[in-house]
Image (cartoon, rainbow, N blue to C red):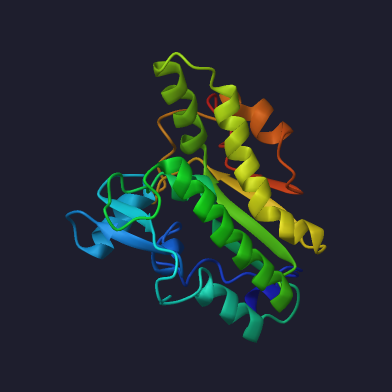
Length: 231
């Protein structure tokens, strides 16, 4: 009601049905959370800042507990008074939660998990658009792209193909929505769950590839007034 009264034309649930902004994948059909120490709630909070205490393993064929966006998607289908938006944790944020060496995972590497995640998210996007979602957003974090740069440089490799591959994963997830006429967007966060700006910096190092290769209709960025690090 507040959104309608304010003149908002595309409705959202404000992510109030998530315990954390990347917590959705943990109970999805083909993806399962795997904690190596902290209690599940603590592990997911750590995972929100890309920690290693919690991980995702691929488990194709495992009985699903719920759909990837069951909470927010189902709520908006039932209650949105007009066109609605659903945000999905991006595939590159999710790939950073890879649980290396997990014996119960079908994906032994982060790259293999990324391929699995793209399929899971792509199928969810199809379902959401068919249910009426007019706007699909991926929630990514600038750190995941910057870490690809740093990791490639440490190995003496060119980092540009790594970032291009990451953008291709975002494009693959959003493609079903774009082909079906929905608006697509990528939110590239710069803050952690406590609201602190990423210590790694801004968008500048990866901006040309990140924005130039993306097929998304919209970008949602976080730039502070007089922020010297944003670009």
